[in-house]
Image 1 (cartoon, one colour):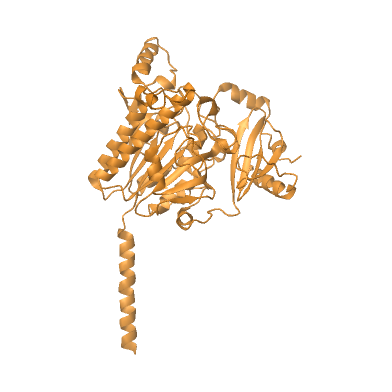
Image 2 (cartoon, rainbow, N blue to C red; image 1 turned 90 degrees about the horizontal axis):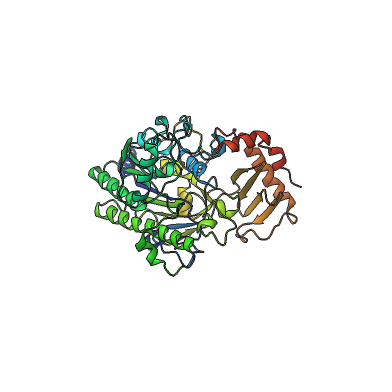
Length: 482
């Protein structure tokens, strides 16, 4: 009997060891994070509310063979703070980055004590690249190469013009006049720390560089890659190629026509990137995530319908974004995920998929959502997501928990309550019917705000002056239910 038991235990030990070895040797996924700039909730074909005049066949193909997210949120409704949250895994209010960086030649950036996801993945053995828009600091200590990216190609500021034949002569002229602070939108692109003279339309250039990076990564498939591809389309200025504009000549509104053409240019690039992944044998084990940095800017062609309002707002249209995930090796095709997720969740989720350890001193505001995506269950049942955008002498602020959303804007001046699962357009205010739920949600975000830190900078000097003049942040007034 003892001999049989010993043989059984020995066999079980061998089996367990083989499982452990197999797990250790399982290839870690490549991670491709694609971020667009100011793209509306309805401005992808895979959205359940897709605009009829937008064409994104390549993104749609990825979404249809992966997972589409109906309730994906970013941590802030405009560019800089949203990107800071994505890279650090922190609400921007916790690290003083609630405002876009100062315009034209900022000497500050995201706190270097906050380790970026790129640095954590780099430490874990990933080959890392950033392409496109940075907007997280322009000085050497904030440069992408210092924040964990082996390769960088793009621009450091908050925006850029798209045609080199237009912006490069303007830059050279201004520079020749001895101007020190030159508009970010016309400065040269950089490859790592070297200025380059680009010749292609910017969206095409960024797609080209993504292809180059993926091709280079294929030289050593034993090392996975992390690529952060941050297109500046369809952010203003609205500039598109003639051949792309011709595809949308049926759209009468010029802004919308140009916007649609800019989105299509991104989608063209996705086609080339997918082809390269397949040609280099990296497609099946590449985890692709696509989303926008915030809602579409409605006055410049973006459509967020049926969501209310757009970029900059605490309404759904400001921070609820189109999003999909694709990973042939792990994700079953054709799934829709209806539950709330946040860009704050990328940091812990990517690290878990990479089999990497999060730094012990690293605070994260998101969570690993991978198992919930696989199971289709809510990753944060009973937990809240917050949005706080500072306005002059006031705030736009909202909190979502499960089906409920409480929101207060400067325009309304009072708290409202919506069942956001049944009322995605925020039309039916239920504050009077459920005052206890409203008060609980307001108490929740008030408590969250206690550990917020003052802004470390303001986008414009007058914003800082106004902040002090109005004795901001005035949270006492904000979190009072009338």
